[in-house]
Image 1: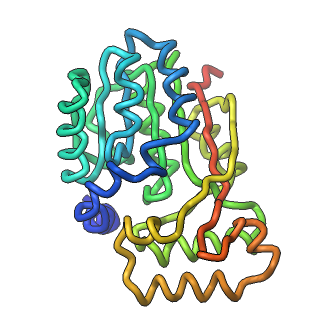
Image 2: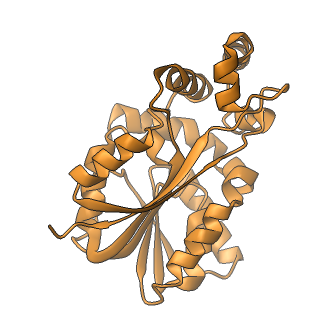
Length: 255
């Protein structure tokens, strides 16, 4: 495990339970859309990559044959296993590991989903190549994540507040970068949906147990930024904000 991966687990291990009850993670139209996609794969083996507290697994499991919930954090996986049992979802198993190096044979999965995880990956291009390897030739990849901006001003502010809040953050990639990385990894990009995701500030920082000095730094940065940045983030009086978020569907390219 890399030093970065160890840092990610150190950040998330103590807060696993908070992610199970997080409204941002437990709800959303993207989960409903994902369920509709999964419904087309009733005999599928699905992979929930960077599963966190397992919300993708819980949504997909009723529609497919089997789900593997995969994450770096053992406590997160414990939360998934316990909650799956409580929900009567017996077709979910758990596996610990990194996105860039997965312990699965080639062409194992019909559906690979990842939600709010890729911005923690140290090497997204390498992870996408691994996804391409473990995905069947007729399979589907669905990526859901906060996305950065091609505008340097907006992007710098977003990455800064994300890093101050959670030092395991790597990058929210902008959509053009996502397209380029997916194509380079051997995918064809299909449907792309975007929306603003409201992040309520108090719960956003408490979920990650952000230290008070870094909370103050985020608030100072947001309070003192330009009108253009405040408009981009849809900044509210209590520092809640709404970054751009995307759901990207991709299939293996056969060219």
